[in-house]
Every structure is written in structure tokens, then in C-alpha cells.
Image (tube, rainbow, N blue to C red; front, side, top):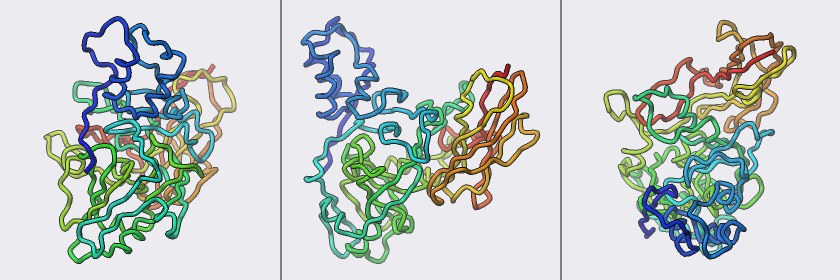
Amino acid sequence: MVPSRSHRPLDSSAPESPVVTRRRLLGRLAAAGFSAPVIASILTSGTWAQEGTPAATPSPADVLAALGKDPRLIMHGSTTFETPLELVDGLLTPNELFFIRSNGPVSVDIDPQAWRLKVSGLVNQELDLSLADLQQMQQRTITAFLECSGNSRGRFPADPEAAEGTKWGNGAIGNAEWTGVPLIEVLNRAGIKPGAVDGVSQGGDFEEMQRGLPLEIALDPDVMLVWQMNGQDLPQPNGGPVRLLVPGWGGIASTKWIVGLEVIDRPFAGTFNTESYVIIDEDGTILRPVTVMPVKSAITSPAPNAALSAGAQTIARYAWSGYGGIATVEVSTDGGATWAEATITQEAGPLSWVRFKHPWEAAAGEARPRSRATDQRGLQQPEEPTWNAKGYQLSAVYEVAVTVS
């Protein structure tokens, strides 16, 4: 059984002593969800090496260094760090730049040698698998994007009806090579009994971290148990030693630190399927859980609010869709009155994002370049976002404001 945990944010407004001892700081870090190795790394940094330190919290740089991440990630909270997409210069997102989003602790310390996956429920044979057991099965490597369900939430209108949750920019997404074993291989070894409907994954971070996945999705060969990311051991903050990967679906489906999978005879009705990570309309009606992520694109060059020189410029970067590969990306520099097809310069199959670019002869004045992607199913980005109470799955056309002189 995974222990239930509660987590207090580092920026608690409770009264503090003017001095934070190492013991008190350790308690605050633990309460905020940091694992023992991360806490140890922070406490041995120069800033916190002394017994008494003026009241403060660890800097984002301290936290990110302890997590093995680039200090330029954007900190939205003690368990939420965004990738500045302008720092990603290739098809793959480097591990140190890959975003972090956790509903519990930011990292879980699980010894890869001690890790186990228990498979139970409507199966012919319950399994208790080690990482070595998984690695003896037929392995695959795929390139796929992973996107937080609330990515780009900060682009919803900033008014009293604005969607709730972390106000992400466009950087709660990354694209990586993932190595592991298809989940179907594990389920076939266990043997699925008739009447099975959902597979419920259990995270190793806290007891309530469970998400149901329809069995027909779980049996897709692209749904995997992965232990490598970009050719390296899966980083702990991103779910290592082993996580579930459901390509194209909102990140909540890809359970980090997975330790259990139960096959059940009904749709799972847990919190993360029926209360959180659900689409709620203006009337407060729950329409559906978050599943496949919509078609989307993001410009990172030029950057928002950039000052450019008149003349030759390039509009560039990424487009993706959970429904299939990207067919076309278009660019407009006149507010959407006209569109021109951009060149897709790099791609790695239908599960991956693509890179695009388009030349632009920039004239002096204010400009708002925008991009619009269409996937292989013919699904296209809408002009305006579809509001929902929790701010999930924003996919509206993206534009950046720049000044040309």
C-alpha cells in the first residue's frame, strides 16, 4: 500500500522565526514533497551549509540543481516547473530542460533494484515484476511528446471567469525518445479475463494517485512502461525508475513512479478520472475526463515582445497533435487575413512533435506573427480557446507580439 501524504507549499504564510535552522528547513522541504536525496543536495549547497540561515526558502536554482534540472526552468510552485521552449533547439527536449508537474512530491526516491510492479485484478495470473524482468521483454524506443493537460492555461482570458490552475505558458510539454516495454506485453503475460474494462495505474508517490485507462487504449503497442528517456535512465522528477507513457494523452494518464496496475470490470471512478482532470463547462457540468490532447503549435522565434530589425526574419518552432501526425503548419503575419504554408524541417513519426519554419520579410511597425497547425486527421487549431473551468487542453491559434524597426 502506498502511504497517503499531505504536502504544504514552500511559500506558506505561517509566521516564521527570523532564523531557519537546518532541521527546520529539512522539515519544510519534506512537507513540500521533496525526496530525501533532493533535500540532501539542497542542504549541502553553499547557501544552506551553515546551521543558522536568515529566514528564506531555497532559491529556484537550488531546487532545480538538486533535481538535476536546468536553473532556467520557470518555477510555478514547489512541484511545478516549466520549460522555456525558446531554449529547446532540436527535435528532442534535453532531460535537464524537460518540464516537471506533480500532484504530490516533486520527486520520489525509489531504488531501481527494489522497484516492483504488481499486476492484479481481472487477470489469470497476478504478477510481481522487477525492472530486470521488464528489461528481459521485447523492448521498443519511440519518439513522443508528453504534454500537461493544462499546458498554455495562462493564455485563457485573464478575467474573473478565468480557468483555475497553474498559469502555464506553452512550456508544459516536452518531446523525447522513450525506451521501455509495451504495456500489452505485461498484460498478455498476466492474461486478461473476460469483462475487463479499465486498467488502473497506481503511482508510487501517494495512495490516491490512481488513473483509469480504458483497456482498448492500454492494449495499444505505443502505450509503454518506460525506464529510459533520451538514452539515459529516466530522471526521478520525470517518473523514474519506471513510468507509464500514454502517447498523445494528457500527462495525467502517464502515471509517474508506477508501482501497480489493477484490471477492473468497470470505468474507474477515482478522483483523477471524475473530479480532477475533467472538462467542466460554464454550467458546472462535468462533460468528460481529459484524454487525447488536441492539435497545437507554438512559435518560439521570434520571442514574445521581441524587438526586430526590418527585413529577413524567420518564424519557427513546434507543432503537435495527440490525434495523429502533423500534416501542415501555416503562418500569418497579417492577423489571420492570409496564411502561408511553413516548411516542416524535422519530424519523427506521428507521436512526435515537428519543427517548422517560415521566412518573413518584416516591415517596420507592430506585428503579431501567428501559427496554425492541421493534423493528419484534418483537425485544425481553432481561432479562439474553448473555455472550461479547469483550463485544460487549450489549443487556440498562437500569436506573438513583436516590434519591427
